[in-house]
Image 1 (cartoon, rainbow, N blue to C red):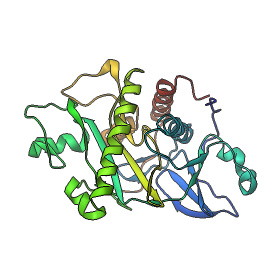
Image 2 (cartoon, rainbow, N blue to C red; image 1 turned 90 degrees about the vertical axis):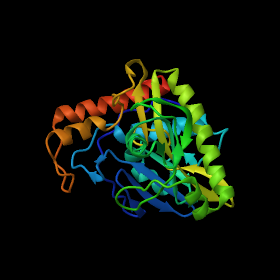
Image 3 (tube, rainbow, N blue to C red; image 1 turned 120 degrees about the horizontal axis):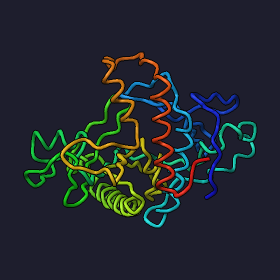
Length: 299
């Protein structure tokens, strides 16, 4: 895969003549018949609020990392990608804006479950463990510390909230919602993707502590959709700095969250603008994650 060039900062797209299906926290999605155009902007959200300051290169990092993983792990499960660089026909007028940050994908019927896999004890999983000794109903050994590696990766599904936070649910609840065959397929596929990706990333100095996947159905076939193992959907930790017993440095927006906590923002919109040094450091973290995983620079 060729190394994409750095693109201009894009906070929002408005493509006249294309039907906007949805505008998420980061992605703008357009309908093209039986296909969708997914555009990763440079927007960044924290605490479920979109910040007014974009992060340069963030959209291209998310898209190019997703394309990298979708291609690399295609033998485990099919994915929705049609093209990441061929924007012809009705898309031609917008090709410059799309290059590097957009994917043309198949439409699927999304499965209403977030498929979270955890290989390490962190975030909401650590909070759950402290209270109950388990994570999403999965009992874990006593005496684990924050950021400890788990004996085996675990599948901890959640609901897909249209706004606000997703809600962790048990595997039994997942079965009740979508049926046992599909629930087991989601679990087994998610764990297989995670284990393969974690092994690959580990050899390149990155620990994938946890990640989330989304899937859809086309004629009963399970398809991997949305994004793939990016700093937005995963916790990436630098392996050479790993030290259990405390939170870990990471290649994601934790730097921004820490800044917002430090200035005492109440986590209600509108969010405050980010200073230039925080923007630059966050951009560098996303770019470094891309370079470590793929082996080449973004631009």
